[in-house]
Image (cartoon, rainbow, N blue to C red):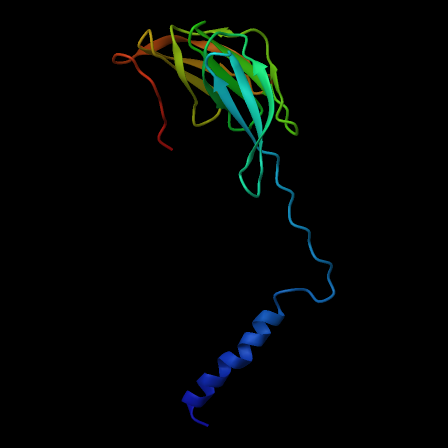
Length: 176
């Protein structure tokens, strides 16, 4: 038999062997992993509240859950730190940041202490790349201020000084 004919038959012999080895015969099927609960949060400017939603892992559909007061005035922005344990809300009219503990299974929000004073007009909040710092863009004072995040309680501690920006800053982002 020529090499060309042998080469045509080798894939036919190998292919069934590869597929046959893909599963363990007689082993019980492994159930698919359970998706972790996923939640979405919306800052409501005029009602001074946060709306919470469950997010379907299959469809992405939002299901309303609850509305929670922020403790501040004119909730403008919300950010969740990387571990998903805490959420931070910038209240632009009361110049403060509300801190919330996020229920891991329920997505419920519980306020942690009183809102933390910020500079004038906290318009945008971003968590730093390492997850232990929170930065606030203060629209009315043209500054960026920074806070350290307590990893156990979510509490904020202001870092000294602010960084000036040009007029009316509205957002901040970090390069990965």
